[in-house]
Length: 129
Length: 284
Image (cartoon, rainbow over all chains, first blue to last red; front, side):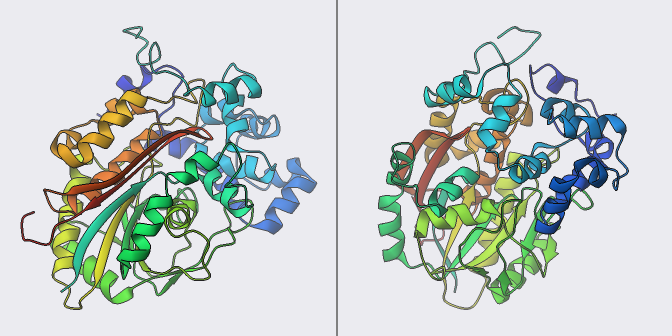
């Protein structure tokens, strides 16, 4: 039996396993459809109607409508697919990444300019390092 | 005979492409990043490679979750530039080298690497940002490209050890191609970065610096880095560094480092760039 428990020990991180890929398949397929400019237009015109064309769970749809990227990831979303949503919104990867942390966009940008988030303290929940 | 003369590694952050495309490359934020490639652009203009075997990862562009090949090779004559959600990058279409690509594909499969063969494929920033960094603004890319796409989106990616051995098999394949071609191998992606979750923004400069140093001096130690260590130390997307090991495996055992550059940040990512010259004697 595959065991990914070691990855669950890393704080604030979701590893996109085959199981999560299965769970999030339709959410990620919806994201993939936003590669097409006419689909982006239809989605922007009426997000709910567009989402209802996909066999996603209600929780997945609500997470998309709320642009709650942590929730989307918890429901099987993969960041490279979710990137099509914030690209459609005209939002940068840095703003989307900041929204997943407990920091403001400004504080996150400042952290990156000062060398990024140190791995010290966020390597392992068990070891607290 | 075709010869592998050099290897290049570089990060392939999409924001670099966006800055380049809107002419923002001399702004305070971006100028230090692009300055790190000035020497490289002069070098490659003199080297004039015929073909680049370009190792990269697709980012939900050519491959949805319907089909996830671990290793894919592009055998088409041309690879169009994809719309990734914000319109296609305004850069030239990428021209393939189908004869060499088909030869490499066949050689790799008989060498026990079960490649997926792509006769039609769009390419994304993972492949085009490195071309922009190395060649600048051009009307047509000055080299043909054999794309090698590696799955690093869905866990598990191939191991670093497997990637290094694929590089060695690419070396055997290129060296058995009859036409006299100057071939470079590029490994792209990395360095440390995490794009998701509350730990987003992770950068590990000591890890990156050690990785850059060992690429030339001690690649065997890099082959043993586990997926768990990559995610812990270099972030969930830092695992892209396994692609650099394909490039390293394709080069001579004893290379000369011609250029090294490291810069933080490009958006959420640490940028690393190396040029290694690969000697032409048989040692490998």
